[in-house]
Length: 380
Image (cartoon, rainbow, N blue to C red; front, top):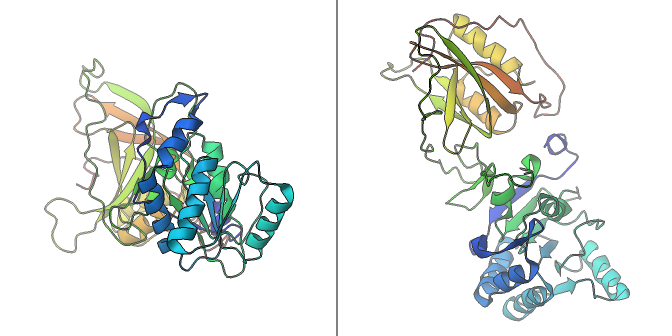
């Protein structure tokens, strides 16, 4: 992400294919889908035809489209449909392609004389074609490494290339998350959600933290939530008893919050919701539009996480957070005091502070006030 922001890598735009195969029935061997089953699933006539039609439609203004197929027969099927149904020349390379023929095809592709190039297992690593401005994934994979290698073919900068479009027909982005936030699971770990979601309007696949799609402006409804602990607990039976609990954070959501019953013009706050389980969320409120101590706390909160100037209003704060202007939160510590109405977040485990989005290295640290809690300072 930092290299993209600094202009060293090309931005990626991701869209989920409107025609996708259901991979839930595939068997897994050695941590990956069984290859024969994958090819049989993806080589469905209707799926190939609809995927090819979508590729052609989405790449009218693209110049170099790299397609990853699930097998040799599948790849040849894709080539046949693109050429016979859409009149698009498409080459195919695989492990059996003679070296001289492969070199000639790759040379034409890199020179811009061949727009569509389909491959199976040969152009994931060591293939350098900076002009690639679209990657089409017709191969589902459980391997984050393979997923990154395929998508990574579009990272290189090239004159006239604004970004690289990723068309995902295998559910890979939703399975693994954005390329800059891969979810690497150890063997035996559960199937936690990747930090990505699909926009129902434009089918862009974006980070799960977005409340509004950056591509089309669609606003996502807030997720349904449960309390972060629903089981009975023996902690805090006595009034005033304190229990501190650390929760690992899987996602963070940002939104503009207006206090219940507030008069028009009343200062709003940024609600920060930390996802700590499948449907468990813990919130805090950051008061950029308030004055006095509430504003001072907001400034401290921001400067610990960002090199950007402290926002003056809540919309700007949410926008900067959603665009990657603050660091990640890996864990939070929550204090529960028996007899008190609300739990409080008392500590955060933070990642590295990202560089400024505009590429500059300016920073105004100011004076950071000591963060303490006052009664009734939760703005809802």
